[in-house]
Structures are given as C-alpha cells and as structure tokens.
Amino acid sequence: MPSRLDAVVIGSGPNGLAAAVELARGGAEVLVLESAPTIGGGTRTAELTLPGFLHDVCSAAHPLGILSPYLRTLPLAEHGLRWIQPTASVAHPLDGETAVILRRSLDATADALRPDAAAYRRLMRPLLRHPHELLAEVLGPAHLPRHPLLLAGFGVPALLPATVLGRTWFRGERARALLAGCAAHSILPLTRPVSAAIGLLFLITAHVETWPIAQGGSAAITRALAGHLISLGGRIETGTQVGALADLPPSRVVLFDTSPDQVATIGSPVLSRGYVERLRHFRYGPGIFKIDWALDGPIPWTDPACLESATVHVGGTLDEIAASEAAVWHGRVSDRPYMIVVQPSLFDSSRAPAGKHTGWAYCHVPAGSTLDLTDVLERQVERFAPGFRDRILARHVMNTAALEQYNANYVGGAITGGVTDLGQLFTRPAVRANPYSTPNPDVFICSASTPPGGGVHGMCGYYAARAALRRLATAAV
Image (tube, rainbow, N blue to C red; front, side, top):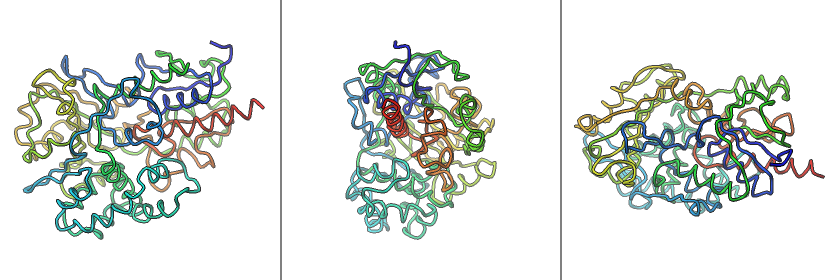
C-alpha cells in the first residue's frame, strides 16, 4: 500500500462500494473501511431464523438496482450477480376482489384497473417513451436537465401529494391502491407534496424491468461490487472502527458512506462549525419494524395471483394506506399498517430448504419505536392470506433499536438515509451547490443522505466519487 492513498471510503454499503469502484475506475488508489466483520450495509444476507433459510437483513427487492444508470454500466454479472425476475413486479391484494398486479406490460396492467384503464395509460405512456433518460434525470442531484420536456412531464404530477393524484386522476379503488402502494415507499404522509414522485418512479421501473431479487440473496450485490473493486486494484478492510479522523490512514480525500451525524462527529475537527450544526439538524424521519419468517410453505394468499410477484404491497385501499402512513408521523401505528412483503424463495430455491420458504416484511413506525408489532403484522398478512400463521416455523424481528445497532446509518430505525420531502429532496444533507461536498474540499459524503436518497442504486456513491475525482485532479495540478 502506498504511503498516502488517493481515497479512503468509510462504510461498505452499496453507495460506499459504488463510490470506491468509480474512484478506482478513475485511476485512484482507494481503500474501503468497514466497522462490521462483513461488508454490505443494506445488502447483507444471513440465516436469521433457522439453518438453511437465507434472509435479506435489509433490502430484498431491487427495482432501482437493475435499472441504476450507474450499476448498469458495471460488469457485475462477471462477478456473480444474477437478477431473478418474477412474472410481475408487485401484487396488491384487496378485500373481496382480485389482487391488482403490476406487470411489465402497460396494457396488461391497465386492463385490470377497471374503470381506469384509459386513465392509467394516459398517465404512464408519456413517462415510458424514454425511461432510461428519465431515470438518469431523476436519480441525481439538482441540475440543468438534459431532457427538460421529459423531466417536466414527470415533474408536474410528481410534485403532487399521492392522495391528490390518485383521487383526481383515477375513479376506481384498484388504480388508486396501486399508486398508493408504490408511493408509500417514500415513507412520507401521502398528503404531502412530492409523495406522488416515488409512486410514479416505481410504476415506471415496473414497466421497464420486472422488479428483481438477487440470486442467493442481496449479499450477491455486495460481492459483485466488491469483486469488481478488487479487480480494479481497490482494497477493503473489515472490522475497522473509525471514531475519529486520526483512525484513518493518510489519504488525499475521504468519503463518508455514513449518516450525517457520523460525519459531524468524526469530521468536526476539519469542518466548519456552521456546517456541523446543519448536519446535526438533518431529519431522518420514521423507522421500520421488520420481520423475517421461516415458512413451511408459500404464503397462502386468497388470490393466487399474488404468487406471481416477489413483492406484495399489503395495506388495502389508498385511504387505508394514507391513514397508516399519516399515523406514523403522529407517533402512532395503525392496526392495519401498510406493509411491504417479499417472498424470494418462490423464485430462488437457494433461499430455503426443499419445500420450505422465506418471508420478509416491514411496516413504518415512529422513529425510535420499541413496540413489538409481530402480532399486528401477522394479522395484516392473515387478512389477505388466511392460514398464514400456521405456516410459520420461526421468526426473526428487528425494531428500530435493533436496526440502528445493526447499522449506525439507520438513525432511529430510518432506512432511507433521511426524509425526502421538499425540504430535503435535493438539499440533503445540507444546502450546498454540490451536496456531496463539504466545506473541507477533501471531505465528501456518499451515503443515502445525499441525492437521490435511499435505495440500492449506487447513484449517491457515483456522484460523490465524481466530485472527489475532480478534487484529486485539481489538487494534482
């Protein structure tokens, strides 16, 4: 190792590894430091319940992974990443009728949204004319758009609250529920502006590529990124706790794949007092309560069509989902919470012993909540899958405290890097022309607390690395 590295990346989540890869591709000598015994951040897989049952500790389905404008440029398949794509992206069960199924085909999806087939086509078709260009515009910092008309076509409805878009654009509950289930990934009250943006974004992704899981578990994404980094000459060290800048080896630049709180604590000696104060006021938002199940069979959904997708949005109608998400922001949890359920073993036999299955689910909760919502979540699944509890062999639960202990980036159990409302959409973690930079020209932030925010897409890491490479080039002159 040289006496002075070009770059050190603190944290080995998808953004930290993506940043390291881009730095290495730019010719930088880069080292990734990870405090845990294993790398991965939000993309780890482990036997959380019983031997032979592989569970994704955090992220499980990856619509933005397969479509990431950056990850798509990397030879991750050469390092073992295999995407498994079910026949549908999302199933959304409803009481007393067939489930809504979000399919890659726009027409097939629309035809099932009676009486809103034509309205759904009118909303989505313009957004699907150049989807990759649109995703590249959306998944990044504020900038002068390359495709302004395309971005404007997305931005007008995206700025709306999801409830407003759903109730004004659609007449029926099926289309409204589909939008609400996607929009609730934002972890915002659906009555707030820009909550529709996440809903539209996920609908777009589903009509471009069916939402995948990673063969063998989300850790395969980590292994592929790490393998590519090492092939480029990068290095990774685990079990290395960084509590102060003095803990780092000498380097020209440092990138933090951490929460703003950790940047403020570790970097305070070299950052301005005002900037540190702004980092301390960063809003993380609600957390989650998560369960992993070892199952004796598939989840027995009332509508078998729910078995066509790895991802199921459980929550009922738009009104129910909106009420559930609003409750979280008022310090409460609904008796019928909105849940994201993933059933990977239906499509990846490596996840469980023969004839057995795995289930993964979470709901949103107030930050720091220590409530045990096991019964609440399992009753909500039973609502649409009677007999589900009879198939549970074992369970593993994580409340907000357990999540933050697992990963210090998940402050209060928040998994998306911070609130993505109008106040923090592009100005995260603080108001700066380049959100990845800090007042110290040699210190950068590459975590999900920068644009475009949460998700396994690596875009935060990519943009931070580009900024750091510009600094390295300037300093070398």
